[in-house]
Image 1: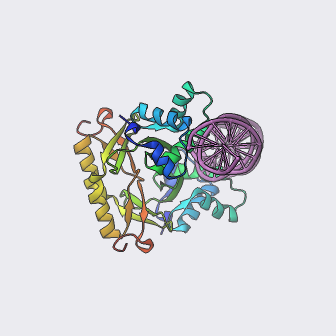
Image 2: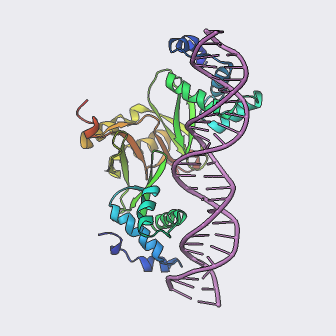
Image 3: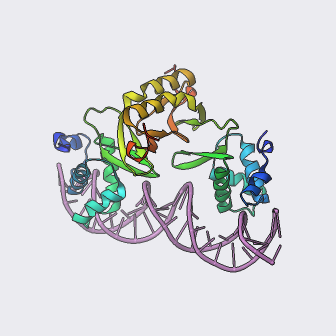
Length: 146
Length: 146
DNA sequence: CTGAGTGCAAACGCTTTGCAGACAG
DNA sequence: CTGTCTGCAAAGCGTTTGCACTCAG
């Protein structure tokens, strides 16, 4: 399960772009992680198998896939993290544990009320996509426990 | 109105720190802006009057005041912005217009419901301090209009 | 063939740091 | 005096960019 469900060549062709092995490799690697990766991590992974692939290519590919809507990004601790965009195209946000670094997803719906409130009270059309919230996860002392 | 209302020397003394002219100048400059400034802007301002003051001193002073709770920071577009911490010590968040760059404040209370929900549903103790949300302000097409 | 994409390497912007000298206390 | 703080300069980090070459179409 992954980008196989997506007609990549067609999407590329439609925009006059090319499907290069590098892009496939990078996308595969991102899928393989199954979660969030920093560019550095993704590069390590890719570079381990294909030493010829450059860091800048990873950046460019990620950026490119982002434009295609295949990949989405967020900011965690000053560095960008990437992940395969969810199929349902629903916005989602990230909870990053300041302690263990774990990243959890929250469906965008949880934020609808907030967005509505910001719009009503401040006339501010919040763009919550890629929003990242830091804190402590359950394991690290958040939530119910101490 | 500003840091005059705060017994700076005493606060410093209590921690074994010093009140240097540089720190006063930097704090004054921050007050003078009355809002959010990037380090670059603040440095410009300070440096215009006191060319001898170094960028690193601005960083260090800001960091220092942050620890004292006099100054708080947020992240806007990859760069840190600083402002005088509100007297009531209430958490507040920032709405940054992606269009005009305007920054608005939102009292932390607006986010309490969200934090509660994250805690209840995910066991995640969200630290919303310094949270920055981007979007479009009323003037730039947000809110009620299109 | 053609030009989108690549690898290389250097530059970028923001921030941090090591150091020796300076000055607040 | 003491040692906190400063200015300088250089490094650090993640990221972006210019260039000539390469390969997908």
